Length: 295
Image (cartoon, rainbow, N blue to C red; front, top):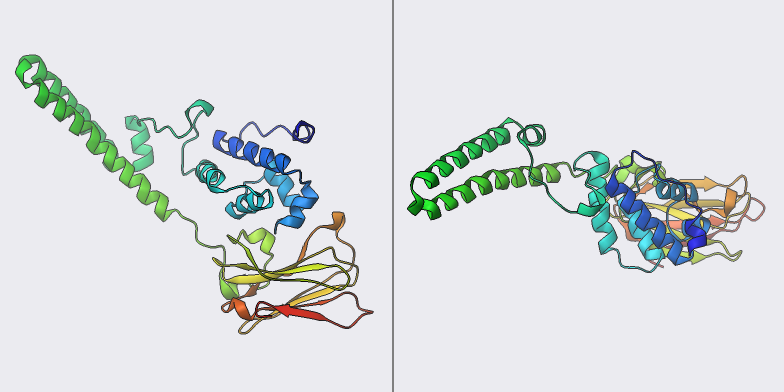
């Protein structure tokens, strides 16, 4: 669908290469799905304005946005999530930006690179390895019969610091894993579109008599839930409640721009199966339509 791709803006020049590749892949997937940004917002828990920022490189897309796009486009997510992990490392400064022709390559660090990335200990190990290389070279020159032993020594000298560097980076990566933005009560009253709570799932859905579609959404990592509804009308009201949590409501005073998805604030969900949602189409129609995960 070249006519859709032609509308995309040029990505920022300072965007890391891994991030540019990810955004390009997301654009291609969105175009191949045939969905407009408005339709994509309806099919995912992410607003049209957020998709515009993600797909134009203005804001880094969270992991759950990549998964949501894959589901909306009916595509497998493993490959894109792997590219997201590389882009996330580049965006947050935990990884190195690589050229487009060497994705996934791991160039050997220099002394200065090792000192910056892994601290003084690794820099010392690299220095010792180079000294061992010089000793091994001298042994090979003086005693040709010891060449095999010299080669083994050289290999050991190279492998040892490399293994230490890899272990250090792996440990750093694990400790740098970001925890959920909030959990349970600390999520209450917050906007689910701005907290980036991972892996939202739909636990219950309902179509109201006036055609409004409602869903109870849950973030397992944040242990919080909310309602999303579309299309909505002036004067509507949606409420979500549950045990051990403060109810949350949204009242519509005007029709959302572009007929976008409307959400409530989040509510703690220690027992997701007990969340309950209610919808009132307008103040002039006080009757409510309620549903829950156990209905």
